[in-house]
Image (tube, rainbow, N blue to C red; front, side, top):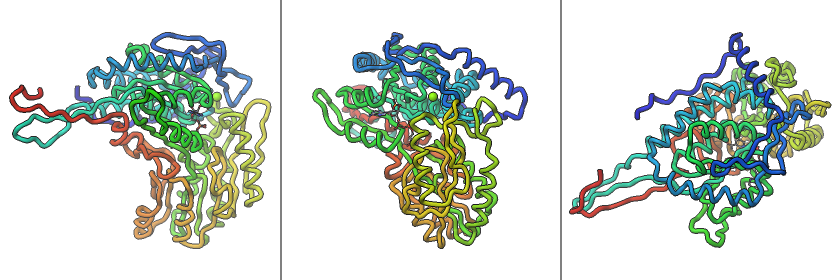
Length: 523
Ligand code: NAP
Ligand code: MG
């Protein structure tokens, strides 16, 4: 099988009436399933539990989108048995056959693209474009990882000696626990899950409690394709309750996690402990938070910088690990640029994202709402409130207006801690060196941007701005699979580079085999 070269999935143009109409129909379709009951899927068996997770619409929180069964320890143990059993055969299934499942799943998702996106509009409050981008990324991950296993599947090149035939192959590692966040509930969930599976591993997928429905839609795709039972087990449940149990389990071979620093570090620590019956050192892939900065120099195109900052800070309500959460402006252009940023921000429309005209929707949950509100109150004391700030829960959804706080000290709380919401901290820098050192003065190192025109300074930034994903003269969000392999440094995680050529190796191990001459060589 020789697939065509990888190409990113195009985004939908919603200015075309036919696309707008198709998306509206998809929203209606998802709405028609509101209140449905979702089972666990363990070893192909659908299990309904009494205890439920309610998947809520954050723009209309009296609307329960689905009643999702909840994995307890007994179900988690059952899922582990099913995944172990499936691994016995799935690991030896030809890698080309495994790749084919992903190609086909990508095809199905492409056909139902708007339904997947519409689910995210309702379940996590993405606007249409953000949801469309998320689904495009999920499709990209499947297309990309399928091609990656075709690259890693065959024998790898080796030096040969006269007395032996040698070969080296990559083999899968075992049962993985896949734990995604709610903020890229299709792309990251599908990416971590399908990379694990295509490598020949089996998976227990524990989606975020804030986004279990979209994960179930992916599970349904693989069911439709006849993926062998037990290869993908769907186990929503409370991270606090069942997360530790699965992470600690002696038969867990690896954990693929994306989420907060707190939970990521907890997983790293617990996975490092060897439990009775455990035969291996667990692998942990942990992609965590960010406190991403955009630096604007005095010779930058200020219009472009303002546009990039506003898009990076407030796209999807600032709830991206890559979101611009600090902007560091050279003192010579500080006032002029701040004014532009505030003007653009004030034009943003906030409201339920079922309406295509609302650029910003609600934040994800009541907990998120409360946390962000607290940071805004802290920020009001630490700087000058330029716009937003009046976070209030109306009787329908958790809406927070885009908030800008200027004149903030680089050591302030809101300049240091990740705020997972629409809050932008603006900091004044005395000069280029000062701006760079403020940008690097963080425990995180995920994304960053620099706006400026001096090539020597750009080269310095490229060398010294310590982030996993660095952008020059563009926004710091919107990484594309295979174009911008994604992952961060320091407390932003293990720099796994999702959507890059190293990623698949995280799910494989290499086996070198030598046959003495005299027996037939490898075929
Ligand atoms: P989170 O609260 O850390 O949750 C992430 C996942 O971990 C959820 O599925 C959660 O389940 C689960 N979990 C919670 N406690 C657990 C435990 N003790 N053991 C195992 N799993 C547990 O993060 P989030 O709020 O979903 O996502 C936002 C965070 O993700 C931000 O910090 C953001 O920067 C980061 N993020 C990073 C990247 C990246 O690539 N670096 C990408 C996207 C997001 P429950 O939902 O049931 O609690
Ligand atoms: Mg929700």
